[in-house]
Length: 75
Image 1 (cartoon, rainbow, N blue to C red):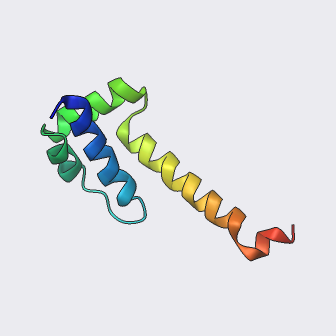
Image 2 (image 1 turned 30 degrees about the horizontal axis):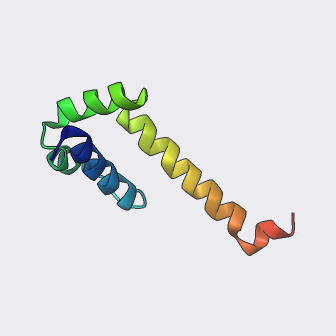
């Protein structure tokens, strides 16, 4: 398994847990590295710090949920 596959496994874990608590150590374990190195690699690969990525994804989910609700259809 190459490092990109491992990082994708970690990203899958993060995406699956966006509505709950995300354990960065568990995500790092899926990438087979320490939490510190995982966050550094994530930031290097994406250009965005991990915490910022999670915040933006959660915000996007809230927005998408709001826009798809029946109440927003009448706006």
